[in-house]
Every structure is written in C-alpha cells, then in structure tokens.
Image (tube, rainbow, N blue to C red; front, side, top):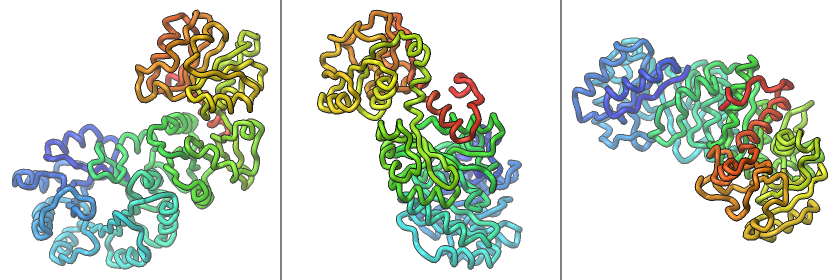
Length: 484
C-alpha cells in the first residue's frame, strides 16, 4: 500500500492535500506533530477525520528526536494522542520505547492496529531483526526507519529484510537521499506499506504520491519485477526514470527503473548482485569507476574511458556507451551524405570526449575549443584533432558544418552563451548537449541565424532509447513528445 503522509498545519490543508492525491494512495497518515495542536478545534477535527474519509488512517505524533516537528513535552504529546485516538482510526504509531499501557489497551480494545516504530537518525544498529520479532510476537506491526548514509547501509537494510522474512506485516524504510530506492522497492523489502508526501517537511526523502503511483508504480512491483536504475551522485535531477518507466509501462514489461545515489561503486555492484538487478545507466561521477567491474569492454568504452550503460548478461556485467552511439544517430544522415566534413566541439569533458571520438571515427575533422587550453590540448592529442582557446572562438566562424556545444555552459544560468564570439552563417548544424533549459542562449542564437539545431533533450532521448533496447531487447515504444 502507498500511504500519504498528511502534514498540513491545519485539517483544512490536510483535506486539500487528500483531495488532490486520493487517487494515488490506499492509506493515510495523519501527522499531529505538523498540526497546530494549540487550537482545540483542530484536535476535534483530527479525531473526526477518519470517519469522513474512505481510506484507513494511521494516527502519528512523532517526537522531535525521531524527526518530528513538535517539541511539546512527552506528557503533552501522549495526552494529545490519547484524545485524538477516540476517532475511528485503523492504526496508531507508537514508538517502541514508549510505555503507555492505557494507550495501547484503548487502541486494541477497539480493533486499532498498533505500529511500533523505531527511528534511527544517525546510525544503523545491530539486532534490529530480534527487536522486530519481539514486537511482532505481541501482534503489533514493527516499523524500522533508518537513515541511509550510503550504499553499504542500503545493503544492510536489504539484508535485514531477509532476516525479518518470517514477519508478515512489517515496515522497513531507508531515510535520506540514499534511502529512496527502499521506498520505491518497498515490496522487494517485504514491507506492507511505504510513505509519500506532497512536501517533504521532515527531510527524510519522501517522494510525491503521483511519482510513486504513476512513474514508479511502486504498489505494483512484485517478486518477478525486473530492477534497473541510474547510478550517479547526484541523480535527483535525472529524467531517465521518466524515459524508461514510461517505456516499460507502454510495453507491459514488468520492470522498474530507480534512481540510486551512489557513494561507492564497488559496494553498488555488490548491492546490484544481491537484489538481482538487470542493468543500470551510469552518470557522473561514476562513468570511469565502473569499468574495472565489467567483463566485456567494447571499443568505444576503451576509447572514451567512460561507460554509461551496464547490463547483466550470462552472469557477468557488460558495458557500453550509448552517449557515443546516441550522438551518431542524430547526425547519421548528414554524415553519410558527406555534408559534415569538419566540426567544432566546445568543451573537453566527458560529453565532449564522446562527441569528438564519434566524429573522428567517422573521418570528420574536429577542432576542440575549451576555456582551459590544456584540457583541450590533451583531448586533441589523444583523438588527432585540432584545438584552441574558447576565447578565440570568433576566429572559427564559418569553418565547420557542425558545431556541438558539449560543456555545461547555460545549464545553471540560461542567459550564459557558451561561445558568444562564434557567429553562425545559418548553414551549420548546431547541437547543444545541455537539456535544461530546452533552449540555451547559445542555441537560441543558432536558431535566429537559421541553423538546423539539435536540442540536448534529443541527445538525452537518443542515448536513452539505445539503453532501453540494451536493457529489454525491444525498441523504445513511445515517440519523443509522449516522453516529454
């Protein structure tokens, strides 16, 4: 079940949140620590709330030490819980170390299930399976929420789920940016529910209800669901989950594509083996670090020194670089008919490297322009290209049929032009690898000059579609407009 955490300051706000998100969730959690409990009418409304909705409701009043928003005394907190519990709730969340027999007895006498929660904001303690077993033996639902500090903690959480496999109803949660996969893959952990919210007021990595229900379809994941993902740090900005999950759904392919923040590549390969992942995309800063773990390293990966796609085949991890082939797919026609004979590439980082090698392998003459001349020189020597300082870009106007902007210029500040002195005559094909914003200042100038342009999103989708085929064996089933 997907549980919507209601964290409004007032019950009116909570009802608005519910109205906008009811279609995505099966359970509600009413967080009293977010509510203005100084207003007695709010407590009365809170007690009456379960009777006015058609979904089961969990009553929660989290302590500040466990990530809650209220700093009232413990006596006041428990008194408020007892008062509001008079409503028709299905669950009440009580911390495992709280001893309030009257509260438990009242809940159980009225058929309210008790969730006994344990929150660990700074560490991952041992013997959690034993503690959970003791809780379950009393008929309560154990809930363990642990802040995940990296991939090694994620491994420990999934191992813990195996140690708790004998407990039918349990909730396991990994908090923080590294813990997001545990929320999406909660059914792989054996959890009976996971939590989402319209706003992550608690800073624990709560995804939105729509994202969980429509993009990841987390409540539909089962034991046969194939797991793919994107590996990087950070990965929160990536639109790859949209590309792949929409494609999976369109095909009826039982799979999910999950973002993984990764601090240690070696540990991630161990995690991927442990949960039986089928493949993953690789983004910065790990495109080089994954290579030693590959059984097969194709030509383009060796040339680029970078891998962006890893697939499990016959028990081994094999790599490729779809940035390379994705770019070539966008310029295949003008390359094949000889229109592109020379090119200018702005930048000397990973994206530029893929473009330069792709063009040089097709016999195109390339000039690399970069702000740091030494980086341009190093890439030029390796690829047999020419190079110059970006400050001299104006000297190269009209010298190439293809201009590729492969630096990050314009990503953080859309008004920044990557090469303002490089003028266009309108006959060039101009590509900007930056995909947010859709049209950078550099690309707008090319459009105004009458150039044919290739957007960064075109590049992203091209390489993503190639990854999709490597992952599934199927052609990508949607057009670009449907994805965007």
